[in-house]
Length: 186
Image 1 (cartoon, rainbow, N blue to C red):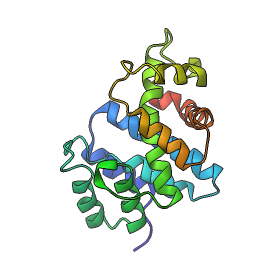
Image 2 (spheres, rainbow, N blue to C red):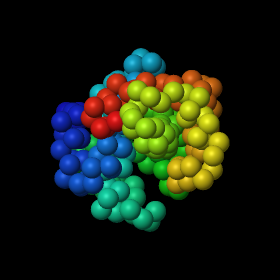
Image 3 (tube, rainbow, N blue to C red):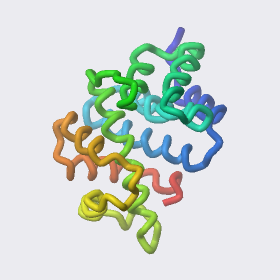
Image 4 (cartoon, rainbow, N blue to C red):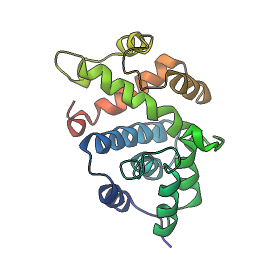
């Protein structure tokens, strides 16, 4: 079976996810994954697809018992590769999937961080990613009550696993998201 395309992934995402914020999250993670694929000289389309689909089942199956396990069943039925499915499992620490490949480490590293960056943008008067910088994200990250649902330890661990400083990692993901700010409404 030929490899799946972004168009296939977008269609699958749209058939399971209707919430605009979840779709924007998928787009933000896709952008960060593609940014890192370019940085690490990896397959941009494949990495983008992992970003786009990492939470595609979440709206329908939000419990830790179901997500991303139910998504795995769907991806298997749709003919997605083991590499892609394993990376999606690796983004969620509760699955116990060890992060071995650079792809697996990267999807874990960018997932929570995109949410924090969106939260920082939303408290700016302009509500624009263009008005967010790395020091602002670092400052807000230290405030545990701010965007309390974002797991800061996962962000720190993700940067460490990519062998990047926290500031460099934040800057990379911020630049990736700024590149699609229109699609994110930010």
